[in-house]
Length: 75
View (tube, rainbow, N blue to C red):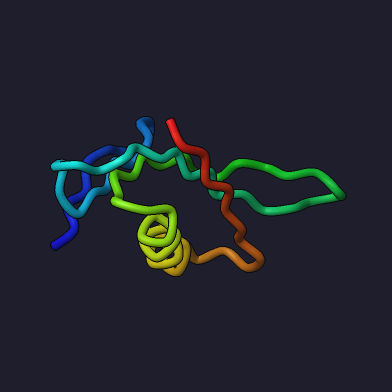
């Protein structure tokens, strides 16, 4: 089960569970005129980068924006 915290002015925090997880920052962007523009930043607790990517894919599909991409950084 995924939990979500945050608001429009704060990064989204999403995690499966907090035990033994790593913390990742996911930056959702769109490319306009050759430059990346951040539309949302999320903090994700996940066991692996693969799990973080799965969660980020789910989150990206919730945005109603064409051409959304994301970058993952371990914190």
